[in-house]
Length: 259
Image (tube, rainbow, N blue to C red; front, side, top):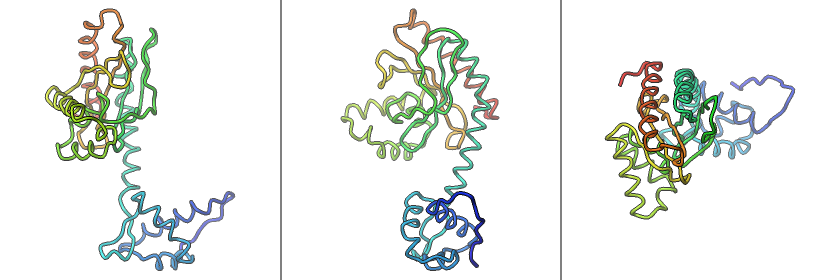
C-alpha cells in the first residue's frame, strides 16, 4: 500500500523522499528491500539508492539480518529521548547553577558528550564581576577537557578506551601525553571530580563535577572555569570546588539521583 502524502505549500523533494522512507519503514515489522520500498512509495527504485545509502550511513536505517533489506533503527527514538533529557537537565540545573555563579562570581556551565566531543548545553553568568565565559553550544575534544575526562571516568574502561581511540585529538598525541590523559581520568575516577589547569586556555583552571546517572541521557558535568591570575586563586580553588560539589548534589536531587 502506497504512502499517502499531503500537499504542502513548500516543496523539499529530497527531504520528503527521506521522510517517506522513514515513515514507511516505521510501519513494517520486517526488513524491506529497495524495490519493495520503491513500490510502496510509488517511486522508481533507482530514485531511492542515494537516499537509502545516506540514511544507512547516518544510522537511521540498517540492513536486515539477511542483508537484503532495510529496517528502521532506534536512532530517532534516541534523538527524541535526548531532547527530553536535555530539557530535564536544564530544569534541574537552572536554579543551582545560578546560585553557583553568584556564590563564586564565576560563570558555570553544563556539558554533555556527543561522540568524541563535549558540548556546552547551558551556561550561567554572575550578575557582577568580569569572568571567563565558555559559551553555550561550544564544542571541545572530550579528551582535552576536565569535563570530558570526568565523563570518561564514569564510563566502563572498555567504552572509555574505545571513545579515546575514536578521538583524533587523543590518538595524535605522544605516548607521554596519552598517558597523562589516562592519569587524569584515573584521578577523576578516584576522587569523583577533577581540578586542573586547562589544556585549551592558558592561565585557566577548570573544575569539573559529574551529575546525573552514568550511561544515561542525564549524564553530564557541571564545570567552573576561572583565571589563575585572580587574587587568592589558590584559596578560591577550594572555595569554588566546595560550591560546585554542593550544587552538583542539588542538581542530582532535582533529577532524583542519589549518590
